[in-house]
Image (cartoon, rainbow, N blue to C red; front, side):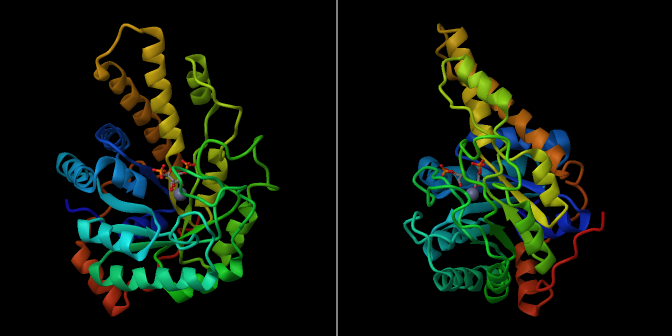
Length: 349
Ligand code: G3H
Ligand code: 13P
Ligand code: ZN
């Protein structure tokens, strides 16, 4: 099975009324963990790489690992996505490598830190759409700005600083033609999202619902969607870690989002926590160990467990075999003839 267009994967998710986790990868073990979780739960997958991941692993290593996953798990549809592209050039290079989807995060300037203007965001995102669609590649845009900084990327500050304005979301979707739209509703990247279990004063599900009502055909994306489970924090701290008390996005809020147009749910931090906890446990309890396989195997298993759980909670489990992947050359024709301009309605619940 070739790599699948993320647009097809999200259109199918909309028809089925479920969400799809988009999990970040930097190395082979993380890709293996996702693929085993997908096999275990029979789920379609979105694998995503940030700019930092592409630099860390080198483009060719990472991309060929994805191709290996594709060859080894032919029954699983895989979309390969550039996470938080900071410029037209970053997105172009991912497309030229063979990614089937890119995020142009024009909510920030090219430095990945400074919020951009609305017009700058529209301009660069539309340019990416114009390059990507004739090649059958999906585009995710972002309107509003998330909080926090991950690996030098992000505006910093609280998630409440730049909440998406629903009117701007509508204008942005119309003027750019993006396939999927990331919105800011109070979440941040990383482990420190909320100082207590979030309520409506800090996690703006009402804004998400308002945007979905205005844009019922646009696939919404929730970034910063790790739940930062207490048990994963505890394992790290039990074995010498020093995490401060923190809260993430409760899974039931993500599920509410999925009932209101969210089709892509970005999760990285939870997997980082699971991996780190498992490695710490081995090194702390068995200090004589020095073969990396002794800690990488439990780390991979810990990530698989988190991913499989999220796949089940987001509803994508069981849907890997629902549809035949459309080659991206055919998808390109759909953009050209206008048939991909209208998105399927969210399934009634
Ligand atoms: O958007 C942030 C993701 O968690 C990726 O983080 O840039 O540190 O690889 P990274
Ligand atoms: P978390 O830091 O909550 O896992 O968010 C990941 C993300 O949004 C990647 O784009
Ligand atoms: Zn993100």
